[in-house]
Image (cartoon, rainbow over all chains, first blue to last red; front, side, top):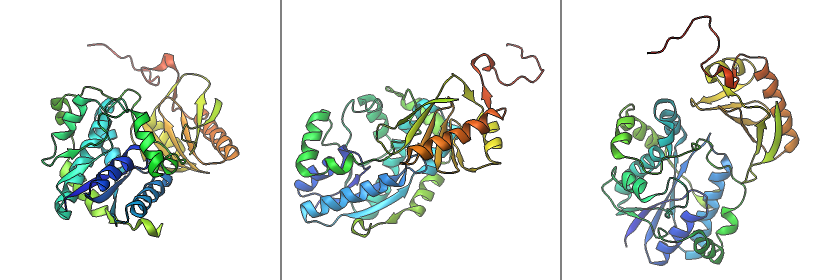
Length: 213
Length: 108
């Protein structure tokens, strides 16, 4: 059975994307990037509740990893251009997800991205994000609008969980880049030793049973 | 110092908005607040501290107070306002070039 690493945030979109692929018979390895201290613990609980709900809904177990992502935010915030922050964040998530995919024998990464959903989700930015990995990113929601996504979320019962209180990422810049250039990003990322950041993220990663929370 | 205390759009926290425009020198802010509460991180444009609750301080002075209690959020905002007002971390708009040092800055 084909396997994908699914990035699950606790928001509305990512569980819908995961559900659509589970419905197609794809096996999911869930990864939650823990953004504390820039979010709160409620997001972790929401993500686990969503994964648990998807397990019950599809009657399939979902192995779940939690990766500490806060230290990566701090490193980028202290050293790199602020308006590119969301790009750095997503590129790091992809790199880490690719390593987890290698470990788990997954063939790609699954995300809930859809065009224009937030300021940073533009085609140009998605292209720049894709450059850091060699495996495909599956985006089943890419052409859907928010109403369509919410309709599915309501139908599958994830909407009520996703909209529970949970602090949004507080480190998002006021004006995130919408048409980032790969060269600019690379120049900024070279200020950091990304290999060390990735290894530390993977060292701090742990498996969490969503049923246990 | 803070005029509006309102729930965040996700209702997981409260937001305090400054009455006046100013910016914060985070190094000075960290130095001052470090004496009275726990600094969780200084991320250059965001300072996170813990006192009565966890607070994200933006460099425009905005506070995100991570609590469900409005009373606690108001108390915490007042405490931080008091600490900031007594420090040299605040830069008013006319001081954007930085705190006065007595040294003239020259252009290129």
